[in-house]
Amino acid sequence: MAAPTTWDSGNWDSGTWDAPVAPIKSKNMNAKVALNLKNLKPREKLAKFQTGITKCGAAPALANANPTLVVCQASHDATKTILDTIDTKETELTNLRIQRDQTLDTAMGNYSALGSCVESASLGDPAFITAKGFDVASDPTSLPDVGRVTNLGLTHGDHDGTVDGAWNRDRSARSYEVQTSPDPMSATGWVTNQISTRSSCTIAGQTLGTKLWVRVRALGAGVPGDWSDAAAIIVA
Image 1 (cartoon, one colour):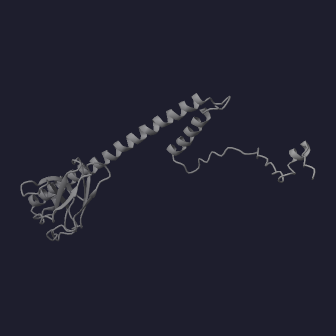
Image 2 (cartoon, one colour):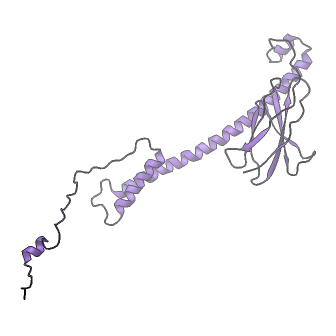
Image 3 (cartoon, helix red, strand yellow):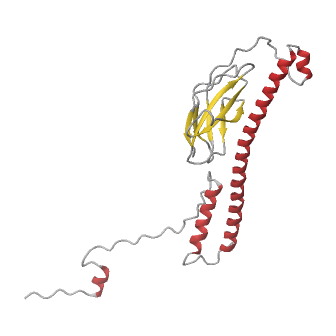
C-alpha cells in the first residue's frame, strides 16, 4: 500500500503543488493630474470642476483639501452666476437685433415712400429734391415698373414664435410690403406686418402652433407690384 502524500507548509505556501504563483504587478506611483481644459468652453470647464468637487467630497473625502471644497464650490457657483447672466443678456441682445431690423425696415420703407413723395412734388427739379434733404439720382432714366414677387419661402426663426421669409429680389424694387393672415386665409384677413428694404424678413410675436399665411409685394417708384403667391407655415 502506497504511503499517503503529505504537504508541508513550505510546499503549500509556495504553491508548487498546483500552479506557478502569478507575479504581483506593481502600481505606477508616478501618475499626475491632467486638467485637460484646452479648447473647452466655459461651461464645459465648470462641469469638470464640479465633477472634481463632488468626487473629492464623496466618501472617503479628500483630506486636507487646499483650497477647501467649500471655497471651490463658492468659486464655481460665482462663475456659473456670471455665465447665466451672460446667456440672458445675449438672448436679450438677439431679440433687440431682431427688433432693430424690423423697425429699421419700417423706417427705411417710410423713408422710401417719403422720397417718392418728394420726387413727385419736385417735377424733376434737382434743387427741390436737395432742398428737402434727399440726394439726386445720378441717372435720370426712370426705373422699370416692379414685377410680381416670386419664390416666397418660409422657415422657422431662431426664436419661438418667429418666422423667417425670403423671396427673389426685384432689382426695380425699393422695398417690399409683407402681409400676414391667420388661417383660414381670406381676402379681408390680410394685415401689413412690415415694410422690408431687403428680400427677406423676420416676423415675430406669432402664436405657437397656429398656421400663418404670408404674402409679399414689391414697392418701387410707381405702382406696387402684384402680390406673390401666399405661403403658409405652422409657427413653432
